[in-house]
Image 1: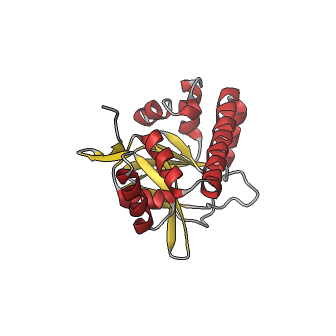
Image 2: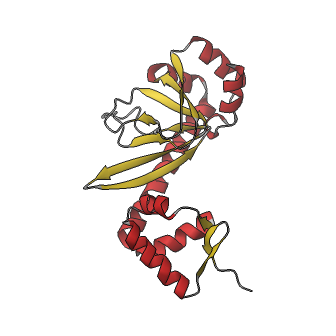
Length: 208
């Protein structure tokens, strides 16, 4: 458990918290540790969200699907908390599917025990509230992008944030568009001299 605590202390939720409090908590609280391989499901949309899910290590992503279309909602890299906004919601069910993007470790903690821990450590409570607020803000910004921006503008935003496109098929899932539509936009951007294909992927064209 020492290794798990070492990793959790690097998570934003436990920044500034007392390591001893976390160690004592894990020695008595109801929890379970599970490992998931790449592409293995961590949680399904509609699952009861009555435990706090901590992605100890590895990476994962959440998706929503409907009408034969799947959209990647968020990507996660441990250590961090998954779905923090729903564990204490009145309707506490998972709104998305969560899939392992690489081999990962998940720590499941009983939500009532976790609530007691929040009351014991005010720093942890503020971190938890801030994480929920930041997550809501990011999702609101992404919703605005879907509603207002053109596909070309969204592709440009993605390139500015991530530097390159490694996989066009994956990006089509992130942007929630058909791959042919995305390919057309990429062709337009290339013909306009805005992007170029390099050995690393598709990147914004550098000024020479």
